[in-house]
Length: 309
Picture 1 (cartoon, rainbow, N blue to C red):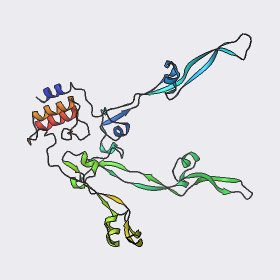
Picture 2 (picture 1 turned 120 degrees about the vertical axis):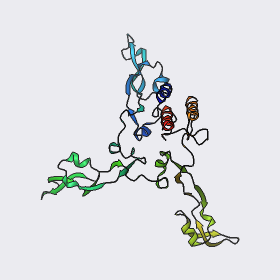
Picture 3 (picture 1 turned 90 degrees about the vertical axis):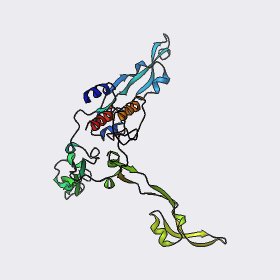
């Protein structure tokens, strides 16, 4: 039965990666960015307006016919669009060989199954024996380290700058995956068992009327002299204006991911509803089974697996 359903579903050619930008694609381990940049001649543009509106093209002219008596006078000019322009057909596609945690960069290592291990050490600039290695390392520069006894002559060059940082950070499988309450917003949004709850409040420093309450209300608030009152006198008040307090958090989900009809059961009715969402090009958090931000055939496949299990 599973293969019958999958055969029907795969007739819809939707990809979770198709609509991602280069940054989104690069940070998604399930996708890969394909560079497809070509150069085209500007000669196809036949007027100055269309020519000059394209980066890399410019409307140019040359003398096609000189006057027979005055060699410095042109009587017939020819115009054309000169140069080349880029056509960027780059795109994001599904990665046929998605990386393991150990193969991921820091931007990809952002789910609850993997964790990024910080490992920063220091190296000495003096260890570089040539200017290319030295100057290409932040914090190091190639220069004169020993001068001759006469003016402005150097007989020994080397790499100066003290120490520099070496980032040996790596991604590994998370041996102790975090609970929902321990997850960041990115991890929470990528986990079907958790949900991110927005809890943002606005306040105003002017509402606090004592130095202690003002200084402890928010980092932007401070107790200071203010000019005011009915008789125009000086007094103390809480300055700083309005501020935002973000207490958003991740918690266990109170719904079943994929249960679109709300009957607390995953079944074929939910599969049909997801197909309708895909065909109508709609969006739904409940229908995004794999948590990639896009509702497509991959979510249907995963839901079918959950039902059959």
